[in-house]
Amino acid sequence: MIDPRTIVINQRLSKINRIVAVSSGKGGVGKSMIATALALSLSKEGCKVGLFDLDFTGPSTHIILGVPSNVQPEEEKGLIPPKVEGLEYMSLVYFVGDHPAPLRGIDVSNALVELLSVTRWGELDFLVIDMPPGIGDAVLDLIRLVERIEFLIVTTPSFLAFEVVKKQLSLLCELKIPIIGVIENMQMDKSNCVQAETEKIGLSYLGKIPYDSKVEVSIGNPTELLETTIGKALAQIKKSKSELRCRIKQ
Amino acid sequence: MIDPRTIVINQRLSKINRIVAVSSGKGGVGKSMIATALALSLSKEGCKVGLFDLDFTGPSTHIILGVPSNVQPEEEKGLIPPKVEGLEYMSLVYFVGDHPAPLRGIDVSNALVELLSVTRWGELDFLVIDMPPGIGDAVLDLIRLVERIEFLIVTTPSFLAFEVVKKQLSLLCELKIPIIGVIENMQMDKSNCVQAETEKIGLSYLGKIPYDSKVEVSIGNPTELLETTIGKALAQIKKSKSELRCRIKQ
Image (cartoon, rainbow over all chains, first blue to last red):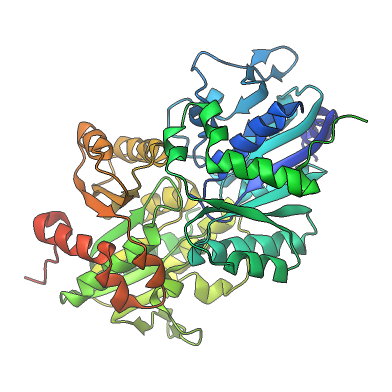
């Protein structure tokens, strides 16, 4: 039998123009920062944007955005995401709060299906999803459940990080999942290694973001985040690469 | 029915004095570097040490150690780990190689049970396990399957990282799992925030490791790794804290 919820998922997502999963094979590369900054930056440009925190290893975009703990989705034939900083904002944190959520893979799948099938997004130009690191259940299910999913991959220049990220890239390529491109975060020197390797696989290298100690200080303050190298680099990437440009309704 | 393999696991581990899972709620904190350096450093002191890479999100200790790809375990009534840099060394990489391993939770559990039940460790003072980040299947199963497991937790000073790590600490405390202590890696300023919060929960703060760009350069060269701030700080921690001292057979 097919879980009846999986049928409604793509109906729920039908009013969304593009669905972008910000993802990384490796943890700790600044994925949540980039997902949040991307959503904010697209919204500031005039796009209608949703941000969906599905990082099962520990949601953190609510901390980055400084969302007060009394902000909750509204229940009405499903869940309507509250507006936070202009974004339609949905997060696992509404359900787990500050408690540890030691979910097994099967529970991750269930929670993912449930959340995707109950959330009532409005008309959006972009839905940005903050994914957990790796290529485990959440990533595999999202690929299975969400037609039209596109991946934006984050890495750091660290050899170890990129070795792990390359495996994720190879899996996504094998599954023929669209990859918008690779962003190199926390760059500390001038090495072009990640760029060269990305282009060798035939993927788009979107740009590098220099390490910026102000990113840590910006936590809880979205306006400051857009003033860090992350915010500035994303603005630049959107300008120079059409892949992430806001295509306001024709 | 109980999986018969789970019964043999603790027999397989019976000749090991201490089993230390190096773990972090958050990825990208340098967990694998610290697990490897700890194993090497204990071995250099005269301990008999095993290193077991169970990072299902992407094993990397073989890259840190510079293990040639032809090194493989020997099959003889199970698997006998090869010796690498004086360590009995076992890793997921022997089984997945350079390929992506998109395992669902249930497959992670299965692989973990299989590996724990077939690996024939010798007499060891320490078995150091490099765990995947988070509190998913691998961590939950290890707690369930391995009596006498102890956790060594790695974090960075980043507010986001420690927020996620705190959830893992709270889960481990709730389950009454022994925690050796918390190591703060990649420290960049003088903040005592992680130390204060760790001690507030009643856990041992083992020390801070300053950020060191030489760590990246040491990849593939174990001798150099022990010369970085990681190697030096671990030596210091072992000297000043009894929790990680090598207790050579009485």
